[in-house]
Length: 121
Image 1: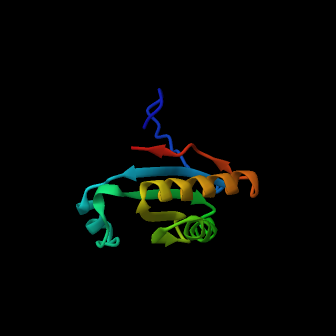
Image 2 (image 1 turned 90 degrees about the horizontal axis):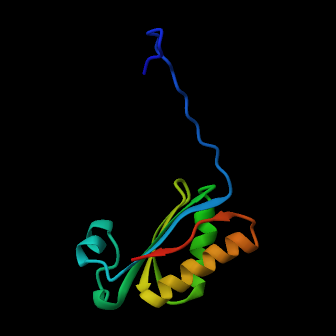
């Protein structure tokens, strides 16, 4: 990148971790290959199943979100990473949706996080 005088401009970007849920999505009835590629439980009824995925900061929040998810209903904890803040759960569509809803509400109402809307497809 250069300015009008032909000089190079250097841009430095940094991220500042806030208290937020930046992504929450429910994938209803995903193809079996998605489960296989993610290393998730292959013993599911794929017709009525769903994958829920979230990302949050600080990344250690994924531990709290995992606890809420498994206590909210019949969901399987597929992946929780306290270093990236990623959480993946599986289960029936209604259970996954309920788990994500409970996580988002708790983080917003009790912990004071900025949260995104839960998307679904």
